[in-house]
Length: 335
Image 1 (cartoon, rainbow, N blue to C red):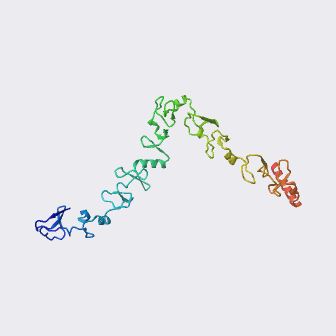
Image 2 (cartoon, rainbow, N blue to C red):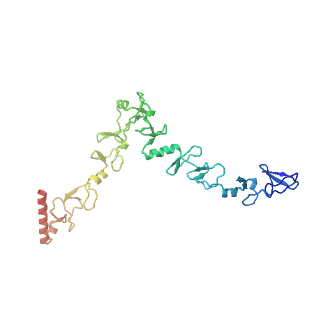
């Protein structure tokens, strides 16, 4: 927009079509001439702030009215978009606001994939698909690893990207990583076995330092753990059950005897009778709570022990029925 001094009255305003007065200041916008009073926003009829206007279908608008009427709002920041608009995912975006939902990279010039309602860059989309399929992404070529992955220096690779450090053969998923004799070197299984380096029974990786020998295998110290709580034994005693190792607490909880009274694991002296187990301090008469021991005489009453004195205080008919019931159970057990 240029403001000029009019030297002749032969021209007319592009808006009102009236002639200009001699020496009148007029506006020249893209070759069209206007009275200053006519060169206004078609919506609010106010002059354009700092001469800035937006034109749409031959009509000129101030910035505010143009945004209200025509400018799209960004789907992320909510601000009006002037300039380049990215139309994607059923919304409009500033180029700097349209980013990958996983890595936050700008997608305007990178391209994107709609993955379950999320805009992902190509690399993150490959990772997402691999995660759903339970597969890994190769650190070298960024492609899905369909067969067994090779783990090296904390990353995952296609095995064929590497060769054995000793014989040079192309590696497979059974390759072994060693820090000696060369730092972080990979070897095929055959060359590794020649070195006679033990393999951990948990992680299947070589044991290059201290090893634990137990259950017919060798383990990294930190990998020989309780099968229930997964805490390392670190030299403490363990208990074996069906080829698995347990700490004392969980072995007794899973396979030990619990006291019929307190329901706690019995780790010390135990009394067992009537198909139940008792702590030494809880083995008592069910009627008078008198303590019993291995020399005490007791009788079964309601599947619990009753001392001789309390049992004799029971009604005669009840004792007769109890005796008859015990005899019947004894006969069934002997058959």
